[in-house]
Image 1 (cartoon, rainbow, N blue to C red):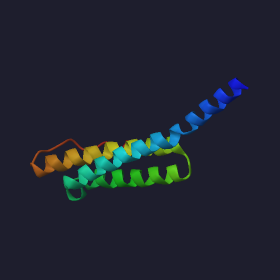
Image 2 (image 1 turned 180 degrees about the vertical axis):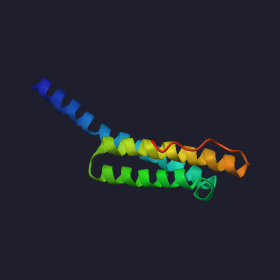
Image 3 (image 1 turned 60 degrees about the vertical axis):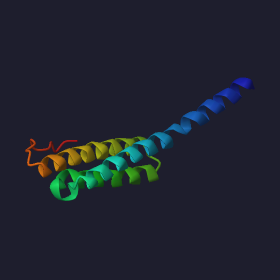
Image 4 (image 1 turned 180 degrees about the horizontal axis):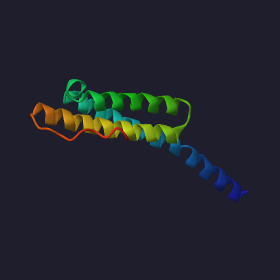
Length: 105
């Protein structure tokens, strides 16, 4: 009986990891997107800005379907594009030129 209780407790703890992990990645991506917005990425890095916003939207959609791993994957892509958008926007604002973005995330 004690083993069963331990097994049930372990299963419950593991089941809770998906939502926590996906929420953490979503929050990280949202922070990156806000930083990109502050840097002016909407106008100075429109490709990366749009990709980041589309990926965060898809991440939220997947999490709403309880597909937490897909949500994490899309949130990570959103964070990468948002960070790139911020970097590109800051470079464009300073008159620097960066190499073109890779279309494959």
